[in-house]
Length: 592
Image (cartoon, rainbow, N blue to C red; front, side, top):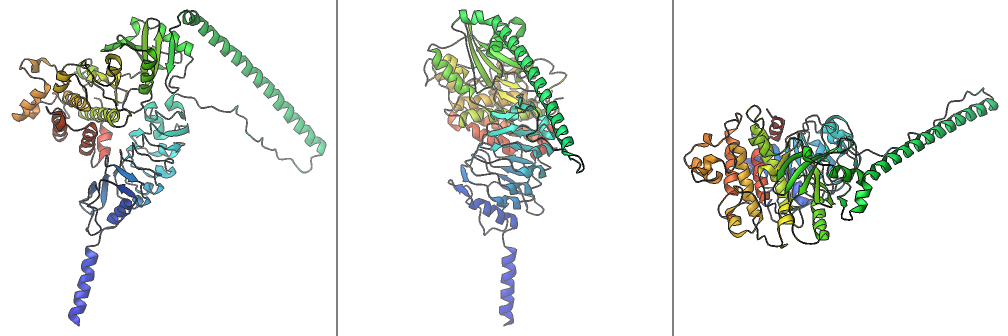
């Protein structure tokens, strides 16, 4: 009898000791609401003692609590279960590039240790949870490319540690609160939300004349006579009537003055516009909030003093509007044969592409003697300028800044390959086509132009468009551009960031090599320290090895063995930003 009792007690103790942790149970609840068509969560089993060896899960070694959920690009459907709020020690949530729908559960704000949330490129609906201000440690918030709508809650401004915010390409509306952390982000964090307004997007919000809907009633002492009350009311109404008349007169004068100014500006250019029937201005999705006459006037007045650069497709000018808004204008020097209607329709497709790491095409103007593309102006210029030209000896790019540029460029290129329909092959990835804003956030430029301006055939490339040193061997031989030839060029770009040398640097050419061959030679000789740019004093050997490994895979001689850009991005994000991305983002804003 005693033996039976002992066996029973021992069995109960063993069952309790082997029971799945509370975090594991919460993850199983999360799994139950997901549509896992590829069975990537097949090893999430209730019979396990902890979830720490499950796919995409990382834990704290001390107490086996879940610290990270990393499941991007897994083709997961379904909704995000409110049970995620039970993972109170969670620091990183990465579910981007899946097919999730439904709302972002408000319970996610119970995870007060969260430092990074990646939910971009899903089909999430609803709005941002109003209690998001509870996530006081949040450093990265990426909700871009979803179906989110409504106002941006002012609680986001309370996230004092926020360093990276991307709410682009959604359906948010209303005024962006100019408060706290929200006041530090510019247009690029909100691009693609046409109904947003505010200082950050340089779009004023419509306001009323300032009168309240219901006028407040003054307190009237009980002892006052009715004649006195009537007198007060008549006096108030008379005063308001006079104020209204004065205000309407003032507004009328202002309207006339504004109209006269507009007529005057328009008169200065209308003769030429009417004389030349070929003048045409197209703005994409309301991205140029200026009168057409002002834009055309500014474009026609561009001259050599406004030139800021030149590239394979033409000369680039800086255009400054009357309110000091600044844009880059590319004068196209070459074009393909065909109708202007087809050209403009394809340009409009490029103008519809919005992403935080792509340069925004705002409009197109056809003048009698030229065709002009209007882009956002990025004050820091290109990566080529900063890496190889002015100021590098005194102020080189830090290692963390280079990693930030690598990550952002990969995101932009992956978006072109995997999220655009039809997909876009860049064909000319190089450092001079990576433009940088004042925060050193990279923006891929000139995407789509190689095909648009060179090809005669809409389907097959017969003329190599690109820059020597970045081109994949099979592209040089066949002239056929593919996603894998873009991947090769991106691998060369990674090597350029590591070495600080152009792909055609004389030190390579003298030895009969390119940068890829030079890297492989030094790696075989175990001379890693000779690969890294000597000006980059803060380079981390661990992350250098990661970048070189990714670059080696991208530049494999066999295109079939190269990863896709989505796989490249996943590798970079997993290796460079896990498990504590906040440390990386807090330091990557450094420039000197």
